[in-house]
Length: 379
View 1 (cartoon, rainbow, N blue to C red):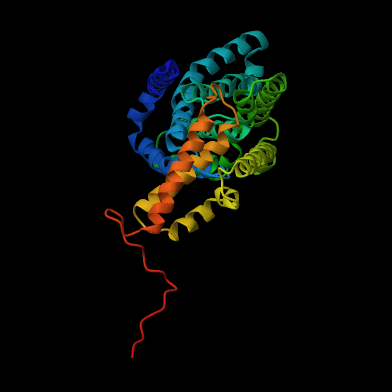
View 2: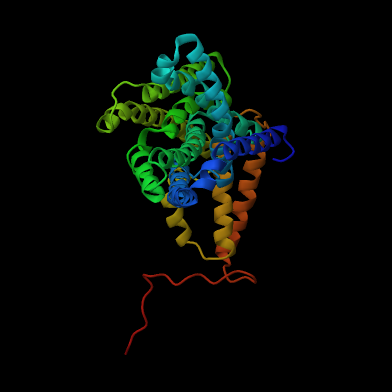
């Protein structure tokens, strides 16, 4: 990973964004440390819970934590930091051309959708350049776009905590942090940056997974839709906290619809690949159903003795899932990956069958007692 230039681009941009953000907020943090600490304490568990939930939205297996953190860091550091001067410069142009009053009302809804959505979606493209197999279709694009948007959302919420402290006169730091948390997290997190960027990421993932004219058109359309949703949210239309659900519901519905379509596309390709590999004899009949559901794979592990047999089963299932996803595409498809995975599956399956046949061989852990085993007669 570190040998790829895109990784160093990601690192430099994250450090640059962090430097810009710290310079923009350090005076407020130094002046109101209690409010800054309160905001950070409130937002930290939200960040952890959001990353966990967005990773788990994959229908077959969670997205790798490392890839998810790359996307979140890009959104919260690189995209957020560089968006601050970009938005300021864009709105300055709007103020000069259309007037200060127009900029006060509509400047944010014009500048932010362009700057912020492009910067957030760049994180999906950078991840695909760092790890070509990470983004193989619209579902991956949706997931990593949502993670990048969520990172941006958390960083922006922290900035709003500091701004609210200033607006309230700096006399009640903790209360201002709690008020911002309630308004932006409890009330507005359901249709914020993660949802907008997920919509654009789904189309971009389709293009990154398999380039074509249709995929390019879909990517452009989804990015424009994400910008339009962002512009709608930042516009002065439907003002007031009571109308926030009405204003935010189209954004949430668009994200859910994009997810459902991407999920259906993924599962259709997954099942097709499973049927083909079963016909080849690589998969055993019935394994496709086990592979498609996490809860069945967890239940399956409990029926296998601990130690080497269980490790071999986990390795077998990982190789099978990698094989079924290999045909989805990516920036740098490996034509020999499928054959290598099929060979690995055959070797691991043979070792697993041998371990099951002789679970007490040296180095193997004894099998756990079965809950339905007959109890010895108490008499």
